[in-house]
Amino acid sequence: MGNLIELFVATILNHNIALVYILGMCPLIAISTNVKNAKGMGIAVVLVVTLTAMINYPIYQLLKQTETTSLALLVFIITIAATVQVLEMLMDKYLPKLYNAFGIYLPLITVNCVVLAVSLFFVNRTYNFAETTVFSFGSSVGWMLAIVLVAGIREKMAKHSDVPRGLKGKGIVFVILGILALAFIGFTGLASI
Amino acid sequence: MRQYINMLVFVVILGSVVSFLLVGADLLTKDRIARNDEALLKSSILDAYDISYSFNTVFERFDETVEEVVIENTTFYIDKETSRVSYIFKGSGVWGPIQAIMTLEADFKTIVSISILAQEETPGLGGVLAEAWYLEKYSGTVLSDQSPYIIIRHGNEDNLPNEVDAITGGTRTSEAFMKMVNETYPMYKTLFESRGN
Amino acid sequence: MKWIRIKYTKTYNLLKDGLATSNPIVIAVLGICSSLAVSNKVENAIAMGLGVTFVVMASSMLISSMRSIIPAKVRMVTYMVVISTFVIMFQMFLDAYFPTIAKSLAAYVGLIITNCIVMGRAEAFAVKNPVKYSLVDGFASGMGYMFILVVVAIIREALAFGTILNMRVMPLSFTNWSVMALAPGGFFVMALFIWGIREWLKYYESEV
Image 1 (cartoon, helix red, strand yellow):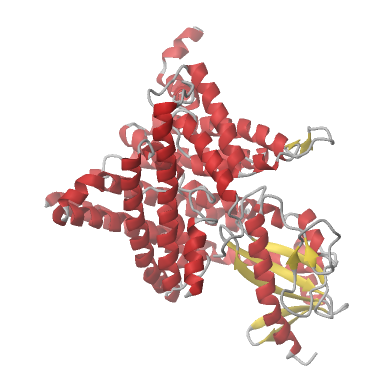
Image 2 (cartoon, helix red, strand yellow; image 1 turned 180 degrees about the vertical axis):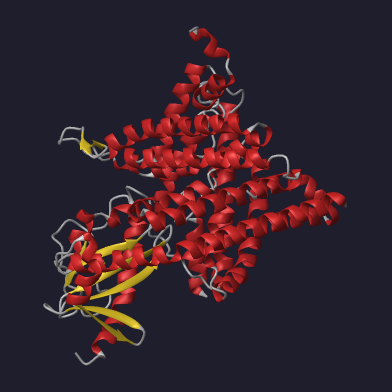
């Protein structure tokens, strides 16, 4: 049990998938304009990543048994796309308010590198099911933390700073991300995965 | 409704074509890839024992000079001349699996060399793990008798016999590799000693 | 031959777009995840740039030739499936016939499959245009990506290791700026680049 708690803390701090592994940057840069959007995207990512990791785990065990692990990457991509599609349809039908709030982000998540990377990581590190669940949940929460941090900083900068016109928009996000990544290096060695 | 059927049919056809291509390519290249891997393994072991060979004679030289001993499904490679032992050990690095060969002197404690068979670490940072100048640092390191067998150097004094340097900028890879060595070594040691040698 | 005529050809404009006015990294800000990891040394940047160019050209060509039969709703999935199949098959081919090259490129394969540039060009261009122009567009985007990557790598490698292409350029008394080898250094150098090139092209975004 303690192992799982350490894994959870590690994935948010010193193995943060956005600020230490630098994955999932494209949507992070595009959607961190204000905190409301960032929260919406973050929650959608947490949902999709955890769900798909939990689905991909038994599928990978099946692939291992039939010795066709060369198809693993492809199968993961298809299950991710299918999960997102089904999730979108279910949300549209049964939770319309929620769908209006962050449903538009769901199709974008299919191409987010974080989803595929989490599945590839649990394969690489041979986690069991409990560890996979905690790892995927923690990684996606870590990503959400990163995007909300960046969004918060950008919101404040829009109001109070005089950003040079060449850096406005996506340029300044790089500087913000650089400083955050530098800060997160300070967590090295905190918890082990 | 018609739309959904269209979509489904397309996905199914695409899925089958793609699976067919991938499995086909896998079958076609499997043998060559296996042979390449074997050649790489054997040439790395011959290098570790300082035995000369040429590109075409790898397999023959290997059969002449190296003895393969299998203990409980694990293969150990022993140099017939100097009794040096090698084994393959695997673990997970930061981005992907790492596969390496550990070559030890006959006492199973002093490292002759480590060579990396496969790794997917960040090129230039963790990827330095596979470069010759870094791996040379492992030659001559003596593994200690109890855990941890190998440790990463902290501080500025000279290395203890079982200390190695970490990779600048590749902290996580260095730690993962250390973990890999430390976890697999006792296992192989017990197996080898059970041979009664 | 009237050189001025070239300025009006579609090919020239596509090349200009990919390399400058719609440069995938600086203007469209795509493909960032991979560019930070591999721009720490010039040789890695060149390898990655060539790899991405090749994959973008091939996948744009494949998607463009399939464009009339892909149903609208499963576009994204189709792109991902086609791209990853192609990359995996190519990797298997390299593993079998050129094992040394395959070993040194092993780390890049994952980065290329999930690279947003490949998907971005497929969605924005290849699915709506004939094969000939998709090839040129793919080449232009790939070259634009490689150009930025190589220039950033030159700066980062010189500051972080003191070498360019493993040849010493900094004086021996120079202490290495290790931060340039890690991700934050990459972010900062790229930010400076984006600033410079956007000022030069006069492409500004309106809000932070």
